Image (cartoon, one colour):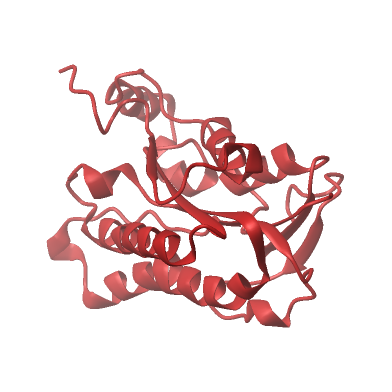
Length: 230
């Protein structure tokens, strides 16, 4: 049986790599603001802004076997420089948009289906200047675990918690070779993450053959969260 996977945000970065890995093996539907990078992949694209549009308005299949929510933010500033609006904006893009979308699509999720969300290594490992994004991503981790418990055994729900990944979203932090080297040296494996590193885990979790994993926060972080080699 052919299976349907819905990606929210999949036109660049990690989402695009997930779409590439899934295309050919699944029917892939991407809902994102642009279709940049998706041409010739054989996926179906819907123009969609997660902060303002209603996913229910899209002509999605009646049954979904996988769901991935990719939108996020990197807002790294000292706490004293962050106003309440910054926290609200990060919660809106990272958590409330996810919650709203999940509420709309969860009736479509098939038996033994899989949902994959994204957090950050900074939730479990306190890091300076991460108060806003860690608060928003921490909400995702709690939401995902509760959702996994509520919908077991029908739906598996897992969260990937990466460290810094070389994507357009992280471009400001990796804008030259010196910055890349400095960030690489912070990780025990001496490099920042690639989109393939993260997408590999997402496609693993979507595969029903790996169906005994749910309620987990999985660190794909070059050892950042568990190893201290300084």
